[in-house]
Image (cartoon, rainbow, N blue to C red; front, side, top):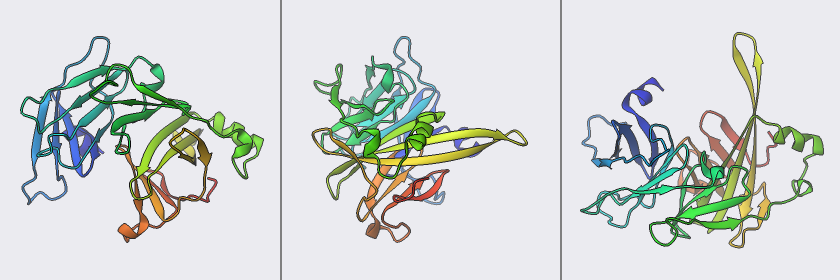
Length: 267
């Protein structure tokens, strides 16, 4: 972690690592092989909108894996707070398009690029709706999709007491992820409960819920994601077929710093 802080890593997407130093975001395609000649793409200096901050980054997302030669590739940097910044690195006159988000429910949300909608999307803090932005007509006013979430009794095998425990958790994080192979959208809800124990340490309890969201906004709790697996890091969530990588198994959630979870597991 100290190395990551020292070199200013703020996230990764599509195999590119992003760093932020002295107000400049730089994309690099390889940090693990020092003997190679990795590509470096410095982006224009970040412009901080009034009453916003650009020092703390929530995450980054990219619309494709070719920011160096795809003129339509968009890089999105979501800062903690109201600012979302977009740019197209491969364009000659590359510059940031800065968006001020007015809804506080998105201030701490993680951004994801939806290939299906061709927009950058974020779940609201309670996961009740999704906001989507682009460089066109939804740059100033996001496209909002309200979600029809299942009632408490729509979550199988969960008692009212267990549901209340989830609702009382100290942190609740929501992540959107798309499967390009099945054309499905999922929302991963991550609940964390912490209790202090000896030696100034915390005992953490994690619980995950996976919701499948259709195009009309109907969200259904599911323990079956088929042959897929979901990988969640601090940067982004991705959904891949298990057969595409021998190191992963179907029906699993691979969560950075929290381990591996089976979709059938309750906690």
